[in-house]
Image 1: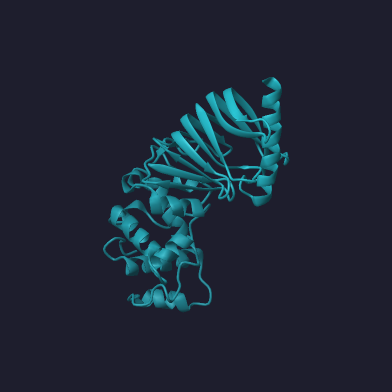
Image 2: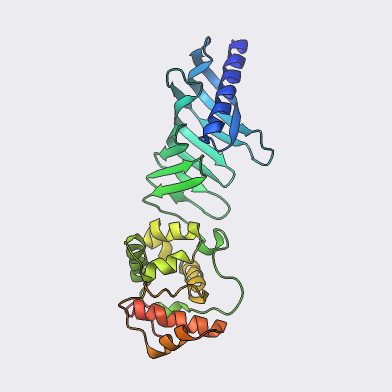
Length: 293
């Protein structure tokens, strides 16, 4: 049986090498396996099922890529006829994936080799040095393009500006907590405009924050965001300091004060003038939500 296991491991490693060509595994080319019991086809080297506590570790030929350890009580494989790599792997019971960026636990995970999607269900939870207790009904990690999505998000701690240095660095703060009269309302309108067609102020604000922070703003439960208003303020401060906030099409239909029009027409603006202009723009866009400067 020991030789059979070795044969299956070698065959699967070769299959993963083929998967690397499609990008479905994001550069991983082989794996190590530790399982209580394995069932498979000796002739083809295809693994059907591993049970009794399974540990695999994805490995890459690239020395800069860290191994990807995955655990589950059982793993079941499906294969397409004539293919040397699995079509899917279903993992159940105590699933744990220790991605270099975060650890993910769940009751169940479905791995689609064709798309690269690793979908977690059954109380999925994410933790790393920045995010604590990020939970959702469903989580999707794509190993092909290294993206991550969560449905119906809750979290214990999410430092927005700390996700990737998205907040502006240096300089005095351009917007204060009291400048926003209704944080929940502002979050709602940014989400609404961010998902709407065409140009609008909300899309301009969202375009000036990092992709990770933008995803958090669009998907995290509002109650979680409101618990982290200090971080929200720093993210908003990024937009208020940016010379790229104003776009004529985005503010079409909004009544701008004369001071804002003069600042827009100016050939150059100081940092203080830029922040002043952007505060005027936000008030013009959301007078019930953002106080006048």
